[in-house]
Length: 314
Ligand code: BDR
Ligand code: CA
Image (cartoon, rainbow, N blue to C red; front, side):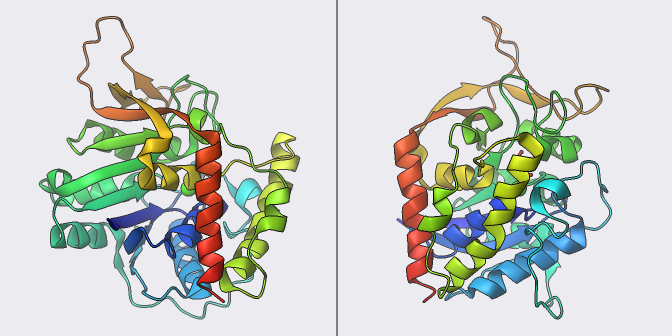
């Protein structure tokens, strides 16, 4: 069955690769792409989403949502990883932003049009979903599932010693979503980091004569360079791509039901995800957490999805 999907994102190179895959995957119906500040500020995030969709020009355009302005500004700088524009300094030809609606309104409208049928894949800070829940408290019960890239089970972060980037940027929103009754799957750092892609990935991308191949060949090399410069690694992690596969193929992931929350105040732990793992937990179970992935199956699914994108953009 084709899965109805909203992708909420902060592009970001790994977000961009996930969008490129999702827009052409025959098992997905991407109803909307909503943007949020995160890897880049709000206006750049909205611009990037439109740039990606225009460059790829899928057969059916999803609804697009603009990122809310000024809710948080520059809590963490991701430009050294994703480039000044978030897309590896992609030379966007975008002249102007199409008329768009606020992301949180798009999420609300799309879910209300198909209650119980829509999965929301969150690839950035959880700002939009938290806003949508406060605007429409019944919404949480109408979403089939939220799949979230973010958090860390071990307590080791990637932006601070304790916090993962998406949680750190807007921990208040993350806490709202964690505490809501919506059905959730968390794909934490430990799982997205179980897959490393090395430079040979670039050789396997679709031909540059295809729109998808051309786009990916433009944005991905920057990520390899920044991983080498910033982390001293020869390979890259594609966190958001792994989360997309978790939405598409949950059977490739081992999960555990857990009780989790997000720290909003700690001077050392702001944005850290905290789980009640006591032998007699006192918190209510509120999340399914991915613990392990089937490396070969996930890698093959990513390859297949990128191949579709190439075939359909000739
Ligand atoms: C997450 O942070 C962002 O930089 C990536 O796009 C991903 O969503 C990984 O911590
Ligand atoms: Ca992201």
